[in-house]
Amino acid sequence: MRAIRIHGFGGVDMLVHEEVPRPEVSGDEVLIDVALAGVNYSDTRLRELGRQSTVEVDGAPGRLREADLPVIPGGEVIGVDETGRRVLALCGSGGYAQRVQARRDRVFVVPDALSDAEALALFIHGLTAFYLCRVSARLARDESIVIHGAAGGIGAIAVQLAKIAGAGRIIATASTEKKRALAVSLGADVATDSLGKGLAERLVHANAGSRVDVVLEAVGGTVFVESLAALARFGRLVTYGSSSGQPSEVEPGAFLIGSRSLVGFWLLDFFHDTQDVTRSLAELFELAATGRVKPVLGPIYPLAAAAEAHDAIARREVVGKIFLDPRTPGAD
Ligand SMILES: NC(=O)c1ccc[n+]([C@@H]2O[C@H](COP(=O)([O-])OP(=O)(O)OC[C@H]3O[C@@H](n4cnc5c(N)ncnc54)[C@H](OP(=O)(O)O)[C@@H]3O)[C@@H](O)[C@H]2O)c1
Image (cartoon, rainbow, N blue to C red; front, side):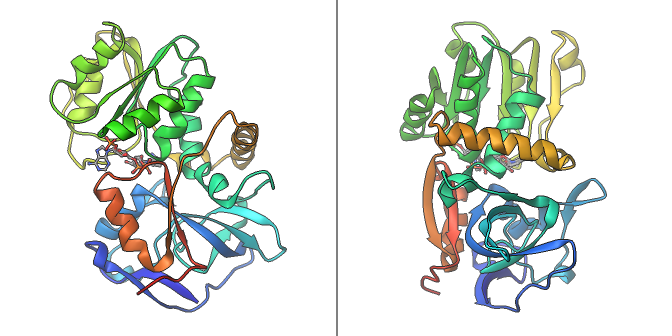
């Protein structure tokens, strides 16, 4: 079968389209004929650093070394299992391929009402947005919320879920006018530039002069620090990534005054309760099938063009969810 493999850590030229052996499936696994593979920011970290955000080793993300290579990236797919069911699968790695194996308890049947792309947009990205708003941020009716990267895969769904939850004011950030317009069209009350100095002031200004109740933050560095500066009394700053790769230095005392909370989030923690994931996915499927949540679908790249997809993420050009199609080989 065809797949993308990385043979060394580094730039997008490490993504090699080649013929590889079919995956071997053990007793508690399912073989899936892949229709689409989701492309996630975390895949770029795997390629660069060997960090595996969708693989859990001793309660933490897996970490590959050179000796573990080659490896097929790709933590999520939609496809057809051996019994003909259309399923989503959290596969850890191996998704950028024509076939992949996945643990039986990480495979979820998809309703006919949704297209492959719609359903896959609701999986890692949709579930992350769902649990961020519902569980980690404990977003309540009439509260204000800042959603960074609001036109990205997670942000675009989080804006819509915050609206449904009755947020009082949804403040989106994004780096281009086009992305900000999209965030507003999805339900944000206001959108401000994610780039440049003075982010804390812009966030407070966007909230009519008041600090904000909730921030969903996955950029790190100055965005984390500025987000904390804009947080209200009893506010919750939920940290779920570090796209900038920058460290953030914050004193614990910064949370003390104002009784503010820093909440961590890792999606795999939620997959320990398969029934809850099944229920949450069903809720997302229903919201999408009835048009109350509209997955924002970006380009579908041929499998061989995985490097283009990773480039788009690095250039911050991605709007919504992007995919690889292993049924369309494309040019090598
Ligand atoms: N903790 C978890 O379990 C979990 C699960 C899934 C994803 N994540 C994390 O969530 C974040 C977003 O993932 P995603 O798949 O939604 O990504 P995405 O679709 O590419 O969106 C991320 C957005 O972040 C913004 N951004 C700010 N600084 C950036 C930088 N230096 N490089 C790239 N983007 C930057 C960009 O928005 P603007 O250009 O508009 O500012 C971009 O649109 C990532 O950090 C990812 O690792 C965490």
